[in-house]
Image 1: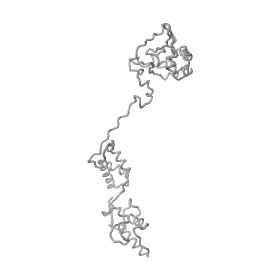
Image 2 (image 1 turned 120 degrees about the vertical axis):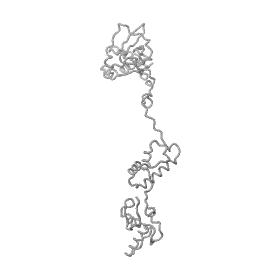
Image 3 (image 1 turned 180 degrees about the horizontal axis):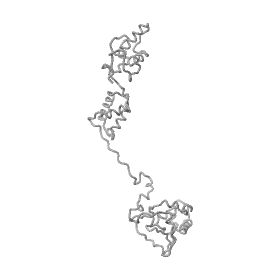
Image 4 (image 1 turned 30 degrees about the horizontal axis):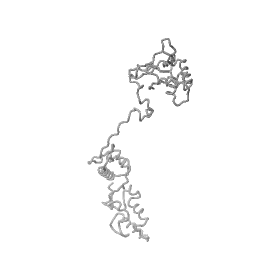
Length: 316
């Protein structure tokens, strides 16, 4: 059975392993996985080929050649006991940390007179004391290809998302939230911010289902302000500014009535003095001229006065 083993950076710096046939170097790594906790395994070329190179067209003779090269260069010991051939990886117990529950080797060690190891210190570095920690050799996830996927591995998972809450039934607009709204929408006067807040409260208190709960109500308020499409309104002597549409009166010579009508009457009086035809409410040129006098040329968002003293005031 293959086990998970460790590989150290020094492996790639070894001159022999770095210049030999790449499949030979790969075979050497594969022997670590097949070796038991003492670094031993049976030398059976066909089985080794099937376990390390299952998809490559390699003969038993090629595998035998690689093994003999590794033995000659001091990376493994190839030996025979009672007519059976075995491999022992040089320095295995110095550089690997088998799992404490891995069963003892049932393969006999090399005869005392057997020598040949000379390269192990050149391709690995020392590790922890053998068996003192639950090493990864018996960790099934390390033998599973899906362990290469960070989402399916034992990687640290992100903290669970905070649970949402509903907007309190007695919610009122905090001052700092009001300041945020005016930063996002600087054109909004105070009374309009309050109007938007009232709509925000009524909507979320009335909403049902899971969508009515939010983890961050301040972020919800910011998005609400960014997406709000309601028209900014003001108060002009108690009259809604939308009444300046030019449709509130009948006829061209009304006295009194809306500020729009009064300004229109002044314009028509001046036109009559110049012997020009008066303008009606639906004349396409009337609205710009009335706006010019009502708002001083700045338009409803920035105007501060009118030619008609006391006719209207802005409460924003």
